[in-house]
Length: 363
Image (cartoon, rainbow, N blue to C red; front, side):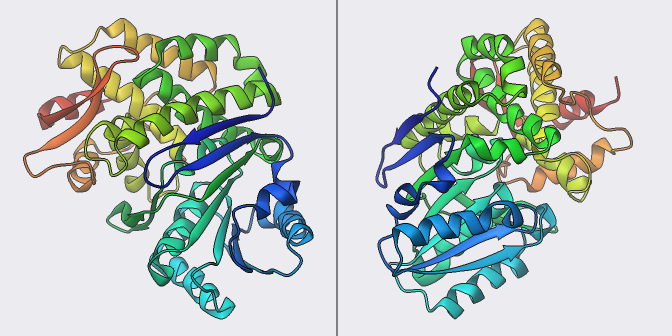
């Protein structure tokens, strides 16, 4: 295992994902994607005090003629709104950002999604560089170009496809991450084993201690393998017309949980962990996969300290109502990413609500 890795993402708008320690202090790496002289560094109130000044100084050291301004959101999913998106647009306007300006998204998935959406909309699209600071963002939201904000009616309902110009995933930034957030990111790492790479689940179990201890080489390997899987799928299906939907394994359940809890309960990774177990159990109920595979997935998630049961007090009918509004639902009925067993996910349409309600009942 190497502490520095690079994944190339192909397609109509190719870019590289660089992974390893020290990237946020690497002025040359930060400046390489900046085509003009204007940059807006978007971060949040948790990450900015720790990292924003260092990133800005490194960027200016490499490009002293550049103008770099900062826009800081309140930390948390509750900030991923049209109002905060408007704030980012106002910041670009105050910068006088031209077509060759660049938005740098320094933070987790909320910052990456909102900053990417602002970049997608300003002058119909300017460059965005993703600087993910959470494991969840490194292996999921920073890769693939899906940007969005939430509405009260549901998560990620307003957005655009806007691939980044570059992704710099600094594993050293994960040392500042709370344990709960690190575990949340590991849920998305486990997802790649669940949907396309069964041997990866074995590797994760064997390296669980190193990952939880935040060893750079283990983290870089896990991030690189996850990003390689996502990049390959995105390259084949950039606008989620088919195979890319597999990346939503566990997310239909997970988004419903987040929405019903008003984003004030389980975080995204925890909700997805529960959602993956529910999707595996639903697959078993529908006769698609053996129960032993669902049990194995549950044990892997528990190994990383993640929740695997639906939180108490949630109304199954309310969760199903949220699922009907989910972007992945179709007019004909509920659609889920399920599996035929570990590493063999597929999309299943017209899943009976009675079966969904059954797996949502307390065990």
